[in-house]
Length: 126
Image (cartoon, rainbow, N blue to C red; front, side, top):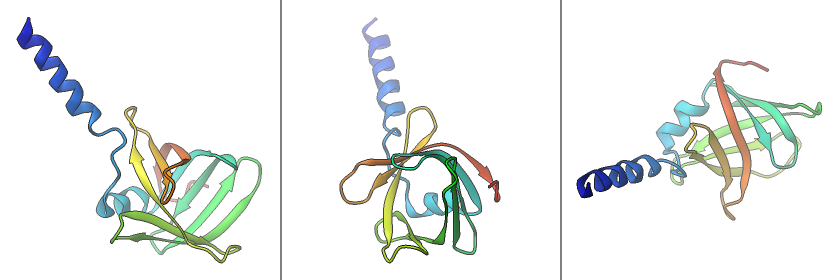
């Protein structure tokens, strides 16, 4: 019985080690490049964002707001960065895995959850 409890505890700790884990620079490239993510932004609500292989980013929220800009991976910090055309500021954030297989975009400085990423699709699905 003791061995069974130890085995189950070990399996749970190994499985949960991936939840909340930040994606590496290489994982970020694979996750975002030529991909449309669907999710819920903490301010803009539900929407989709396409990350082109050429560095173009396009976003459409369900409320009709559209944004265009450039995106890249900051390899030194393992953050996904972007600059919207209408803003004179770079936004660099972490992407974390969730237990249920989804991902979360997390603020690069204060750790707040910014976007709950529900799904991804290859190519531009806007």
